[in-house]
Length: 123
Image (tube, rainbow, N blue to C red; front, side, top):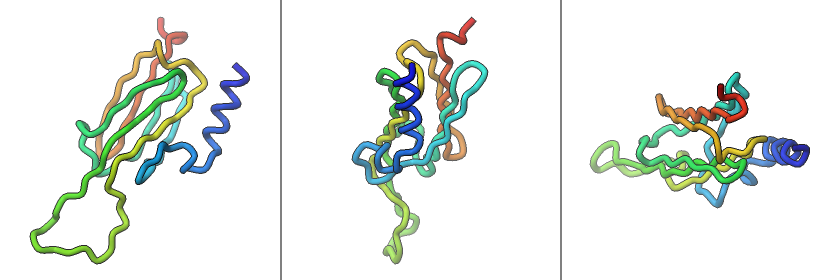
């Protein structure tokens, strides 16, 4: 348990690049402790729900996806590009084993909500 807490705290304070797999971009995330587990909220503006994947490995939640550019208007050329369009992978360490949890996702208004119900809190 102490090692898990240390690992969790390190994941919170590492630079953003240290928490992402070799991506073109790294979506920001908020992590909340809830009455029945955890809520992880990721800012995934411009993604379609079918382009997002969620998995676990031990105590690590892994969210992968791809944001694609689309032509807004025929014949336009870029003048300035600030939005990253590419694949990403974001790993988030939690202080619990995620293998036996109930995970549900909800995607609305560009935000992915990952609800994690932990076994020790299940009735």
